[in-house]
Structure formats: C-alpha cells, structure tokens
Length: 218
Image 1 (cartoon, rainbow, N blue to C red):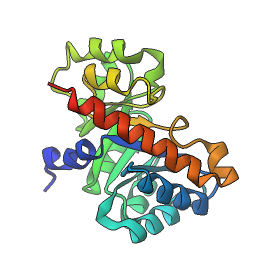
Image 2: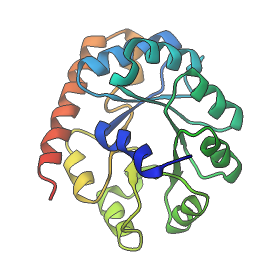
Image 3: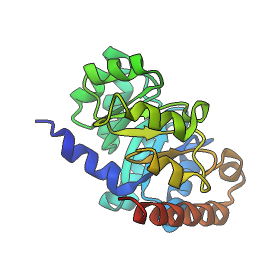
C-alpha cells in the first residue's frame, strides 16, 4: 500500500534534487559520483539522458540507500516501469498527464508531476501526486511560489528551474519542501568535458547553502 507521507521523507531529507541531463549513461554515473562526494544526495536522472535506465541501475549499485535516486522526464508508462525496475525510488514527469501519473503511481514509487498554474496544481492533486514540481519555476520565482501557498498551504511543492546557490534560501522561505537544480548545479558542459572536480565543488556550495537556509526555517 502506498503511504504518501513516508514517500516524501526521502525528498525532504535530500533537500536538493540534482536534475541530470547527461550526454551518456557513463557521464551521468560519473556526475552522480561527483555530486555525492560534494554532499548532494538527491539524484534525478532524466530520460533525456541516453540509456537512462542503465545509468539509474549503475548509480543504485554504487550508492544504494545512501542516495535518494529517481528518474525524471518520465513521459510514458513504460519508462515509469523501467525506471523503477532499474532502481528508481521516485518518478518525475515535467507535466501532469493522467495516464502517465497513474502508471507512475502504480509502480509504488513516489510520484512528482509538473504544474505551474493553480488549475494545473489542482489537476495534479486530483490524480494523486505526492508532490508538485513547479516548472519552470524561473518564470515566477519565489514570489510566485509564495502566492501559490495561499490557496494550497498543505501541498508539497518542489520548484525546479532557476534554482541557484544564491536563491535557495528564498525558495525555502517561500514554502518549498525541496528544490530541483539542473544546469546551475551540474551543467551539461561540465559533464561533457569530464570536469568532475568542478561538479563536486559546485555540489558542496549547493549543499552548504541548503544547510544554512534550512537552519533558518521556523
């Protein structure tokens, strides 16, 4: 039986989900190693990464329960099933499609679906997501998330897009449960060039910023 509260615990503990759009499965796995070394333990390997399921399986093998591992850009029921079989414990779709979300929920994994407007948030809640991914969050910024919290005070929101070291504290103050960080945290250029030390260093900055912002929460 699904237990939504417990499914969110991993997200809340991780705080930051690194959204990886890597040029290959091998690059994705090396990036995961660097992120973990830097203290970022929430990992979302997107299906825009070639052979994403292979990358998920290898990341799960290397790091096990030490990380919170999932699949992003899930667009089909087949991808949802494949990702969970590979070791994903959460699934993220960029939008809210009833068929895809139902398939994601059916795997037993934590399910996060993308939404931006109040109507889209209501649709996501109606079909039973565990958290709402505000995407692209850069369009409205923390002020927009704070406004959404008015009619939706009990919804677990995870803004993705436009999250940086400089504004993590603003997102948390606006009511985010966690944040998703893509190119600001792990850029495609750094992955392609194999700059793993740079990725690790950036991860340390993000982790420190999140820890500092979390300590200021009421």
